[in-house]
Image 1 (cartoon, one colour):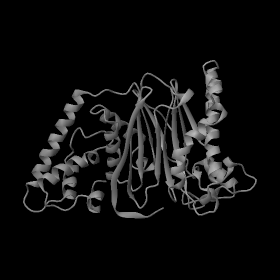
Image 2 (cartoon, rainbow, N blue to C red):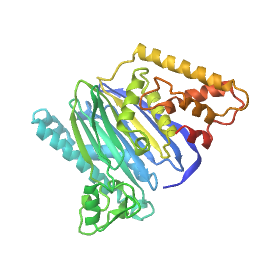
Image 3 (cartoon, helix red, strand yellow):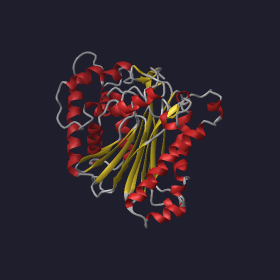
Image 4 (cartoon, helix red, strand yellow):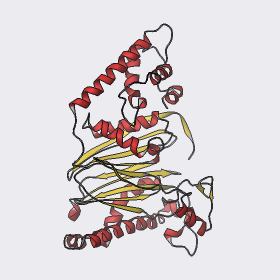
Length: 387
């Protein structure tokens, strides 16, 4: 769990799509970790009676990728297979009160998490004790009228509205008072901010070695599979929803990430490219973890602005001039020196929330063109210099 590579793997997996008035892009990257343990799911149009709904999720695995991969393939089905999502139940939703409808959906999501967690115990490699992996999970079910976000662990979902952050999920950490109380009631302890000094999250799917306390229900164990469910009525000023693992949130606050996303939406409609920029920016801000992110834009998302495009071009022209000046000095110049010099320049109009690391790729592009004789820009010194 703590092993790192000599240099990060920066190849990315990307997807994009649209449906039900939504657009999405996703990016995942292994980064410095020795194994890629993240997984994801994205379905813009659910089948059957739920054709007007969408589902998105990010899973951050630990101690292996088996459970996160299984959850990415089966969580949606586990949720929608419950009686709350059967055609007869869905047909009734339009005729029921809003409170009753919401409670039924919330109950179905909750049951789906617990059902999946129980079923995975029967997987041969898990039942034998060979696989001890687990995963956090953050998912969103988006209906024509509501957004339902379920979180289990320390991946996070954030909704941004035109006036600012609409809501964000809360991370489930062992030091949280409610989590700590449950852990201690189950006979465990919280040491070095971890469950029994080992696991850094207090809720997760899998991790069955922490779920064997006799006389305790599934949600009373050292590690709980219970999701915390957030419900928001959709509004005309909803702009975008971000689901991401802690490899992203370790180095960017909710506000930083939302400001950065919004600034990128003003200059591009390419959600894959924006997702890649987020992941790259987090890498160069110092993230050492796997990184996965799904960006979903809602009908109120900002449109591309020619003024914003112009400002971005002016910024890149300024950066190119400064890099060119630095490369024309006598003697050897390195990427770390370039980045250090730029960081001391107080360059105006850098991407909000991203800063200079968000333009690292552009700087490297100019540097390679001007000084192709210089060392590989992917070495550890360069990576660390950009944090």
